[in-house]
Picture 1 (tube, rainbow, N blue to C red):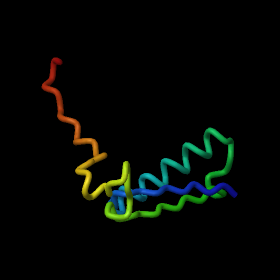
Picture 2 (picture 1 turned 90 degrees about the vertical axis):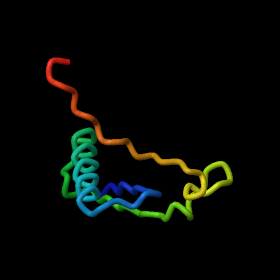
Picture 3 (picture 1 turned 120 degrees about the vertical axis):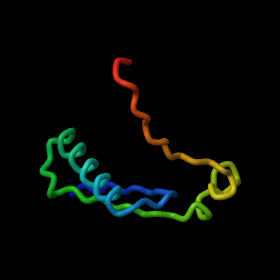
Picture 4 (picture 1 turned 135 degrees about the vertical axis):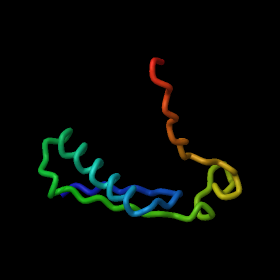
Length: 77
């Protein structure tokens, strides 16, 4: 029984986590030719103060790994 473990330094809302779990499961099942109900996904959320890069916490680094929402293009472009 496969286990997919996600460590995330930016806590997300429940709906986003549900979507991530569903999509990881679907992708793994398709690629590995497995039944989705055999795949386990665990999300561990760590406060940004507990995650460091280059000797600095993410909270102190100012790094933001979020992608801004896409803007709609005017029609005809």
